[in-house]
Length: 238
Image (spheres, rainbow, N blue to C red):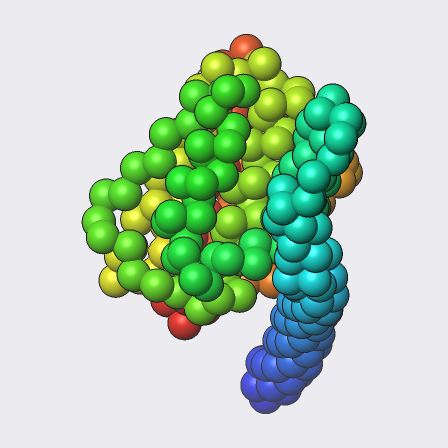
């Protein structure tokens, strides 16, 4: 009889402990999901504001400068040197305006498509580092939010490489699969200690964007042998 009582006491205790553990796990999952939701909302809000400013710069200021440039070409300025200086200054302003707009938000990404836009980025950085884009399968268009985040991550990664790693090569692999979108970015630079640099803005920005897509990611970096970022975006988030 005593054995039966002890059995039921132990069973009740185990049930109680299991319930506490489950409640704790549920709380942790809810907390993680809440953090992901906050990251998503934060990134979306930033992108909307960046897009608004970028479009204003690109469409309004950029067009006004182009019109001014055309206007100056059609009037006679007695001092040829002054004319050349003014034309040169306007060209620099137009280029600067485009760069500012481009850095704020990839305005033409929807028009050109993700792959062409990445190739344009590669062309713009070709004088600083050798970047190669590989597609193992034909790319299929994704949700614009996802494409913007992946583009931003590639942009941030390559910027960090150019500034800090001393790398001569960067490789970008983009592959579609039945399970989702796979992206791998790597360089042959000096590498880094993740624990030491993870609080830096570059890593934070990248990981915030990855969290907003609920993406799986893994950093691989070896001092003196370069770094690699592996990204897997689930099919339902494409």
